Length: 447
Ligand code: AMP
Ligand code: GLY
Image (tube, rainbow, N blue to C red; front, side, top):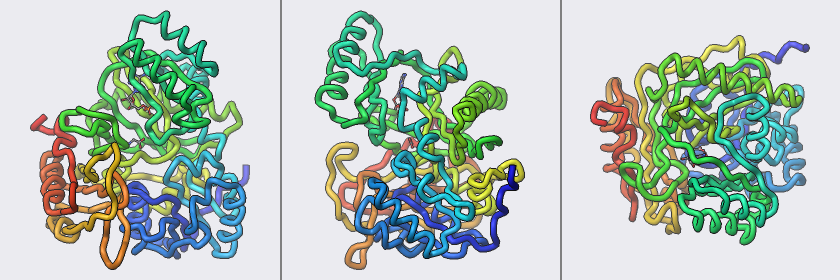
């Protein structure tokens, strides 16, 4: 085996993606003493644009959708001496950005397209979990709608119906009644609401219990489990209303004790990495396991091939040390010689949203008060406002998405971090804004 390339003293980085997760990555990358030049691909993004120069190849549209654009991007990376490409979202990974851009001297943080299937193809992930004996919900897979309908009609219990492909978090339907299950099958396979992502459909047993996200960095051999974070998926206070991309997260989440963490590593992460290896896949990047803590132990709901959003924001707010070295060593296959440490202070990230989210919402609302919010953190406390759906327009920062800001606070304990993040949210204004004030409440002393 050739020796993994050592992290250079100066690294030119291209950061792909334009949401809160990528702003957190860019914010941390910018603090690294090893940063040469930072390039981004999200033109005018409120948080990222001030951090780096925009890569021209990508400004005209979603380059990663076409192999032609990836080919052009490869040429651009060569010309601009890019050493490390950090990929935030799953779509470019599933489209093969790693395979298109990685060379002996240019590393890509994030798995190759075959590794990204762990997220992009739930049927593949389920089969891999079965082959590795990883605990997960029982499931049947279907490619013909009549077969799926026949199956649900023979079942009494509620079930969960999932489009197998990527669906921006929208392809999972919890069905308590037969009518709901029939409707879900029609949406996925007949109406093709999720396009090709619904070619295969999974019908899963419904599990119950608290959920937790376990994110690990892996270079295909070694695996470094990061402090657990907990997301809040429902839009309303007290976990009510429809699912969203995530309304807030805190870290570390004390949902799992040390023994349970060891079980997750032994029974879930290590076996799945071994199974990937058996498939001939070298998986380098984030391995994210979405778990449900059932009475029978932790079970996998899904794997993701990238950092969670918003989990990434409180996680990186607490990450100590040089992120470029950490990302490089992961991508290079050198994780065994890297050490990762976190700030002892907990972090709480509260997402401020546009009125109407996760349904339809208006864009272009002027945002005020971000600087004031960030000044609330003094002494041992810190407030960082990560931009998710914002952009620079006419000298102002305006809303451009459903999830607008990830208002993140670090403090001596979770109660204080929660209070500070909530206070910071009240100093920020845009028309129709709303947020959940109970992020982390169950885990804090108020819960
Ligand atoms: P996924 O994208 O597969 O993580 O699913 C999104 C959300 O749907 C999860 O965070 C859970 O809240 C819920 N979910 C997914 N699969 C199941 C299941 N088998 N049982 C109960 N809830 C589930
Ligand atoms: N926060 C959930 C996700 O990133 O998939």
